[in-house]
Image (cartoon, rainbow, N blue to C red; front, top):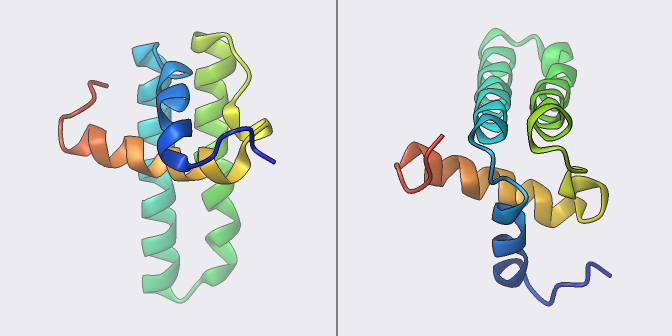
Length: 100
């Protein structure tokens, strides 16, 4: 049980865990690398490189949390909602709705 009735209820908490702009930047870099790894692996047919996607995504995000935000990543307590939040926040950053 996540403690949240819905993702809509969870997302404000998720954003509060990313108040430091440097943490959001690390998330943005990690998510962009995930997209790049997936696209390059699929385009080249070298699917063995897909293991790098979670390493890049979580690696950069966790550096942001431990190094800048000084909190524990939400993924440890709410893995699915946290993953969803990563991509919603990424989309909002791309559209200029959240500063990074």
